[in-house]
Image (cartoon, rainbow, N blue to C red; front, side, top):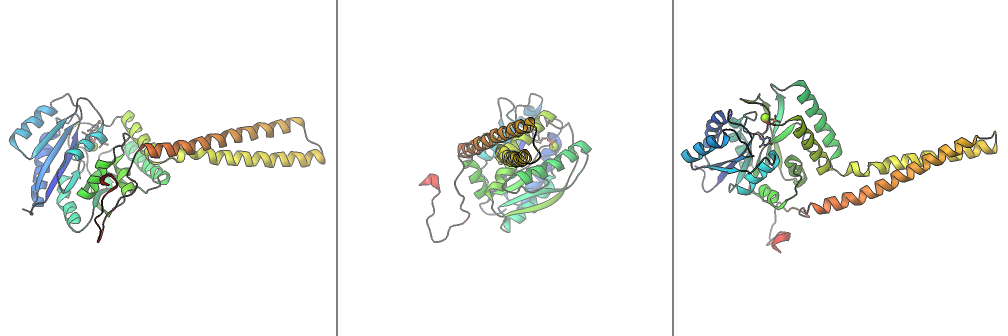
Length: 317
Ligand code: UDP
Ligand code: MG
C-alpha cells in the first residue's frame, strides 16, 4: 500500500441497476491493483429504479464505498461535481458507470500521475457499439467546439480522467452553474497527458443521454466556453455595412455618369441600416460576453507551483 496517499473514484449513476452489479467488482479490482488506499463515491443522480437498493447493499458490505443520492435528476455534470466536492483523495478519477470507460485503465492513469501529470485524460481511439449518428455528431461537435473555444479542448475526450488534488481544488473554487467539466479542465491548464483507449459498448442498459439531454449538453459546451456567437453579428455587421457603403459609392458614380435608378439608392440605404443594426447587436454581445465571464466568478489565475514564497491564493488573502 502506498504511504498516506489516497485515491477517490467518482461514479455518476442514473438508472443503472443493470450495470452496477457488473461495474462495481471491476472498479474495485482496478482500484485495489493501484496499491493505494481508496474510496469509491457513487452519486445517484435521481434514479428511481433499483439503483439505490444495489448501492445500499454495496455500501453496507464495503466501507470504502460512499454514496450520495440526489433528490432528483440534476444531470451528469452535477453528479460528478458532487462527487468531487465529497472526495478526499490525493487524486480523483471520474468514470461512467456503464463500463464504456474500462476501469482496468486506472492503474496506468495512476502511474502517469505518479510520474508528474496533473490531469490524465482518456482519449478515445475507437468507439465501439455506438450508432453512426452518435459517432458522426460527436466528431463534428468536438471539432466545432474546439474551433469556437479560446482554450483548446482535446478532441475525442470525455470526462473519463484522473485529476490531481491541485486540479480538484481549483474545480472546488469554480462554482459556475452551467458546468462543462472537460472544458473547465482545458481552461485551467496544468500538465495534461492523454491515455488512449477503445471505448467499448455499454455493458448493459441503454444510454441515459437522450437526444434532448445531448443537445442541452452540446449547447452548454459552446455557450459556456465561447462568447464568439455573441460577437458574431459584429463581423456580419461590419461586412454588410462595408458592402453597402461600397454600393452607395457605385450608385453615386453611376448617377453622375450613366444615371442610376432611384430604387438602387433605397436598396443601399436598407442594407446600410441592416449593417448598422447588426453592428449594434454585436457591440451589445461584446458587453454581454464580458458580463457573462464576470458572472462565472472564476479564479483570476491559477498558480501551479510557487518557489521561495508563502503563496496564498486570492481567497486566502
Ligand atoms: N448519468 C447521470 N445523469 C444523467 C445522465 C447520465 O448521472 O442525467 C450518468 C450515467 O449513469 C453514466 C454516465 O452519466 O454513468 C454517462 O451516461 P451514459 O452512459 O448514458 O451516456 P453516453 O455514454 O451514452 O454518452
Ligand atoms: Mg455511456
